[in-house]
Length: 174
Image 1 (cartoon, rainbow, N blue to C red):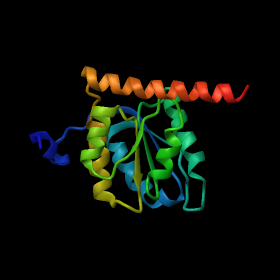
Image 2: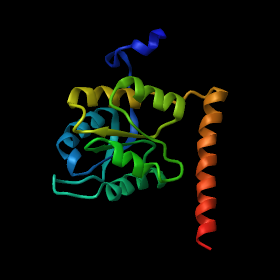
Image 3: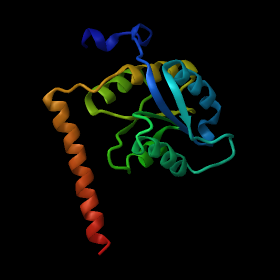
C-alpha cells in the first residue's frame, strides 16, 4: 500500500468550493442536517434540493433535481444521501456526464475522484454515521482528478459508453 493511501482524512486540506449541491430522500433526511453543516464549512453556498422531512419521496426525483445543479453549471459536485446510496447512484448515472459512486469509506471516495473523475458522492444514511460521513465528504471534496493519460483515457471511454447508449436509444425511438 502506498504511503498516502493510509493517510488520515483529518490530515487533508479541503479547498473552499463556491457551491456544492445536496439532496436526500426520506431515508437520508436524518443525516442531511449534519451533511449540510459539513458542506457549509467547505463552500460559500449549499444548494439543498432534497426532501425537507422524512415523508416518503422517490429517490429518482430527488436525484434529478440534484443533477440539474451540475447540468445547469451551478455546482461542480453533488452529495446525495439516501438509505444505502445505491438507488441514488443508479439514478445519477443515467445522466450523461455524471459519474456517481457510492462511497462509505475514505479510500473509495479518494480513488473515485482521482481515478474516475466522480462528481457525485452517494452516501447511505443507514450505512454510515456522522463521523464516517464527515470523513468521506472531506476526502471527496479534497480529492482531484489525476490527469495522467491512462485516467483520462478511461474516463473518455465512459463518455464513449454514454454516446453508444444514446445512439441505441435514438435507434429504438424511430
